Image (cartoon, rainbow, N blue to C red; front, side, top):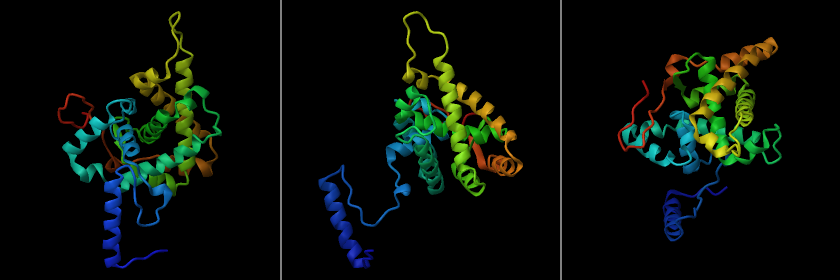
Amino acid sequence: MLNPSLLEISRIRQIKNNFERAYPEGQFVIQEMHRQLIVELPVFTNCFIAWESQRPDQIFSDAELLFNQYMETYGIKEVGDPENIYALNGWLNRIHLIWAKDNPYGLSNSLFAAKEHAIYFHLYAISRCFAIHSYQTRFVPRPISTYQQAFHGGATNYITRLAAKALNHAFNQAMQLPLEEGEIFDVENWFRSKESLRAINGAVEEGLKEISKLPFERRVPISNALKIKGADVKKAIAYTTSGEHLSRKA
């Protein structure tokens, strides 16, 4: 593996800067990277909004605005916490396994077709698994706390699948609701509505009841992994498009 000296690094960075100035949409990668640790800003923005503001319904139009407002209000230190970025990216990597090309978990075809947006509702559902199980429904768990606890408890796959099932159930229930004559179910409109969030919360709550049916040796570590302490939760970000400052929800 290339291990350049400090002088070489300086020269290589100049080459990198020259290339990226000439081709702003490109990237000159200096060192080998772990693919699962590569974080893209638009994806991180959507993950951040889905988790921190608990409003994945806003990723369709207002995510960038809300993200910028949040940075102005709370600063880079909170927004750019490396551990939380790592955790959100880690959860998203787990989510992508559920949404693999061959749809291995049998998600609704209509939901699967909306994967581009649905994955962020899946991430939201994961956050709600921890909040609801911990009786902290008005709060948002710190991403890194959830990811570490799930990892050490061997529960990441179980929680990711539980959240996927909850999202799928909420979506299928919505599709079965009666419609006005001539009306058709609009997937995007459902995602944009707050009703989607209420339905996901209800489905997560029901899904969590299944834990009690697991064998003891599985039930205990999964249940413990989902329990978040008060020090590891905070208020969700209040949502606004008015340009006013943001605040934590009361």
